[in-house]
Length: 209
Length: 209
DNA sequence: GTCTATACTTCGATAGAC
DNA sequence: GTCTATCGAAGTATAGAC
Picture 1 (cartoon, each protein chain N blue to C red):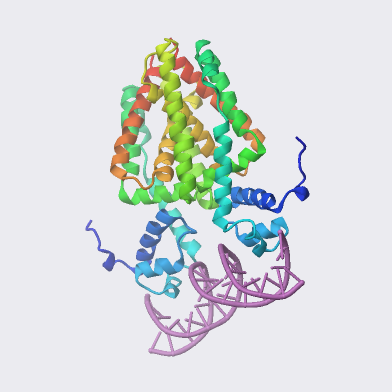
Picture 2: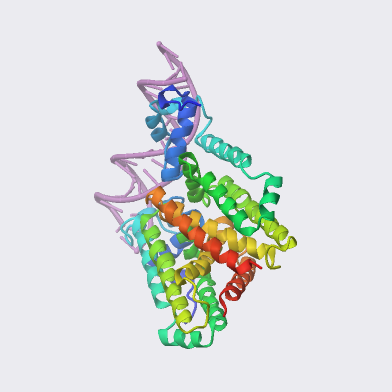
C-alpha cells in the first residue's frame, strides 16, 4: 500500500504517468515524444523500447481507464435496497458514488483528457459515447423505471427523467474540464456539489408523489 | 441577395470560407496552411497576402461569429409581451429562436468549431464561457425572475431554474457537435427537438402554478 | 496578387554503438 | 535499455521574380 516514489518506478510506468499528465494538460497533439522523454529523463529513442508508438501510449491510457471504470459501480442488490428507501436516499448515495469516482487526482487527469480529446480522437470519442453517456443514461432509465413500478415517484417517461438527471452531470463535466480547467479543483467541486444539490432537489420535488 | 458562386468571391473570402470549413472538420491544429491553400486553389505563400498568419484567419472567424451573435436576440418589449402570455408561449418562442440561430449550414460549422476547439484555444474558450454560457444563464435567470414576479410560475430560485433549463441546451450542443459529429444534421435536429420538447415540458410542469 | 524557391523548425520514428 | 546520430515528412513563414 506504500506510495511509490517516481524514482523507483519502472521506466514504462514513468512514461505512462508523464504522458497522462501532459496529455491531460495539452491534449494529445499538443505533446511531443521529445517532451515526454525529457520529462521522464531519457532520450526520445528510448521511449520506443517501451511503447511501439505515441499512439500506443494513448491506447494504454484508455485501456487503463476502461478497466478502472468497469470496476466501479453499485451491486444490484444494494441498489434495490436503496430504492426501497425512496428516491431521496438513492440520489444522495448516487451522487456520492459519482463524486468518489471523480474526486481523485488520478481520475481528474483522465477525465480531463477524455473531455478535451473526445472530438480529436475516435477511440476516445467512442469510449465517451458508450461508457460515459449511453450506458449511464440506460442505467438511470432503469432506475427511474423501477422507482415508478415501486410507486416511489410519478409515472413519467423514465428515459426523459434519465436525461433530466444525467445531462446535468455531463454539463458539469463540460463546464469544469473544458471551460474552467484553469480554476482550482477543490473550489470548483464545492460549487459543482452545490449546483448538483440544487439540481437533485429540483428534480426530486418535481417527481415525488 | 443572390447566392455568389465560389469562383466569383475575392480570394480573402475564399480563404475565410475554406478555413472555416476545414477548421470545423479537423480542428485548428489539424489543418495546415498548405491544405487551405490547396483547397482555395493558390500557393501557400499567397495566403500571406491576405492574412498575416494562420492565427489571424482564426481571429477573423471568431470576430465574425461574435458580430453575428450580437445581432441576434429578442427586443425587450417583445420579450415582456411574451412573458405576459405565460411560460408555455415564451418557451415555445424561445426554443424557436435558438433553433433558428443554430439551424443554418453556416452556423453549424462555426458552432462545431467553437465546440471542438474550446479547450485548445484560449480566445475561443473565453468566448464560449462569456457569450455562450454566462450571458445566456444570466438572461434566463432574469426571465425566470420576471416570471416569478408576475406570478406566472412558482417562486423557486431563478438561477437554479436558469441552470435547469440551459444546461440541457449545452448538453445537446455537446452531444451533437462533439460526440455525434458524423451523424446526419437533419435527423439529429429532429431527435434534439424532441428531447428539447420533453425537457421543456418537464420543466414547465414542475414550475407551473 | 500569384508564383517559385527556400529557410527554418519540429515532428515521429529508426539504426546501430555501447 | 539507453545513448548518439540521423532520416524523411510536414509545418509556418519569407524573399524576390513576374
